[in-house]
Length: 179
Image 1 (cartoon, rainbow, N blue to C red):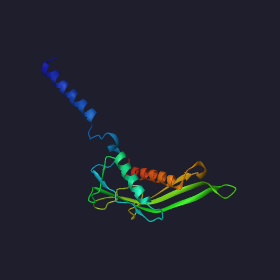
Image 2 (image 1 turned 180 degrees about the vertical axis):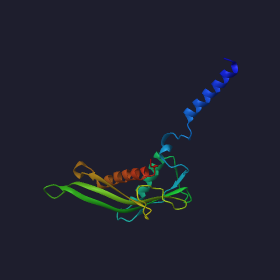
Image 3 (image 1 turned 30 degrees about the vertical axis):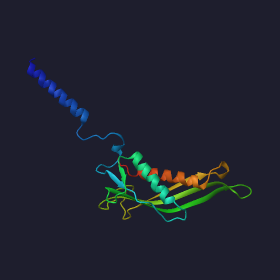
Image 4 (image 1 turned 180 degrees about the horizontal axis):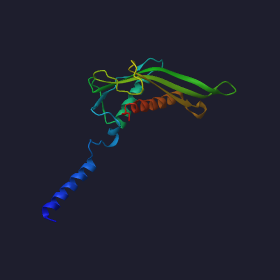
């Protein structure tokens, strides 16, 4: 075999190896593969609170910002002209007694929060893609409950904080690209 044939075969092998390794489309690594491309920034205005519980909207805002910064490739910005806007409104919060002692003291309770959330781009297009059938409503309702037992030293405030953190995680999970 001549030297020219060997160099041609080597070049072909290298080219085939590169195509096999790189592939035809760009491959994204890490958590960036889970989220839509073309988005770099997210604006999260303070969550509107339509409940009587003070500061619950601010708590959810902080939890959302933490989750976005921790789990997504996006940067949260205070600029309202960011690539996208995540708007949320705290619709309700509740406390339900599940069981009582013989003296009618609450033994176990559920604390719950309900939020309406919408994630849209600059043109106002909805980016949450949760339903199979598109609707005119640009928001998704999220509900989160958390069990608390006062006899074990748990309070409504700690249960609500846990529910808010779980809710923020669920909202940010909806930002992922659907397969």
